[in-house]
Length: 344
Image (cartoon, rainbow, N blue to C red; front, side):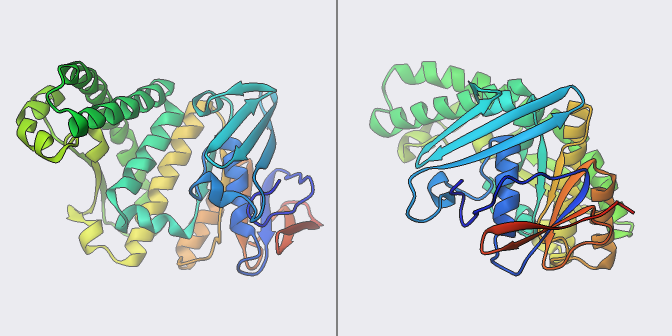
């Protein structure tokens, strides 16, 4: 396997809540990250090289999923700068995998969705929309390629005639991406607002809106003509958007407490969970890392209730959550099944 410190045998997780229990730094987060990678093809922990066991040059994660329409086998091969995804033995792209599997990973670090950089919030949107809409995934990948080429021309030869061709394609892609983001945010904001009220038990309203240049991207490029050539970089477009999050109209980023930020980020993950559930017509695998971290009793109960209503959840902690159907103990990357019990 060679994924971080993990040295597990073949593990079989059953229905209901599967508790992953161990001390801090035992490998709980690594196991949930590996499960997320196997279900989504995405690396939540950073660069590929950082996920490989020290001293190794490649790694592997394999996941077998049972759906209402049968079994699917997903294999992810990892090497520095390289990732190969196979679905039922066929090499596929991450966007192809999104049609066959889904998972949602909830971690204490999700609070950085609120207080962290705009790039983290864009990544949340792009990851979710790419898994819900194959067209969005294709558009976003092409947009990145065109942006890279356009920046290279601006830096090297801003008067090159080919810049206008790349700019036209850039505007086409950027306008469609912005439109899809705005439309999706209507649904995301609605689910997140309702979830925030349910989680917090209060009456504050969570708002979510896209912060972007509210004009056609072709006009925005014209307006930024001089600045782009002076700086040698594209200064407008969806790659500079941000997600504006508010409570009763006031910025959560600027004025929200740590608890409010954690609740808002949890509400965004619930929106992710419900959108993927609607997309696949079945619930995604739910992965909850360190279920008690930075959460009071009410928010913890909400999170565990969500896990209980999910057909399959992996929940980690230094102690097992109540009503776990199965318990796995982890120590220095080694995993063993401790108990199997009937779900209460």
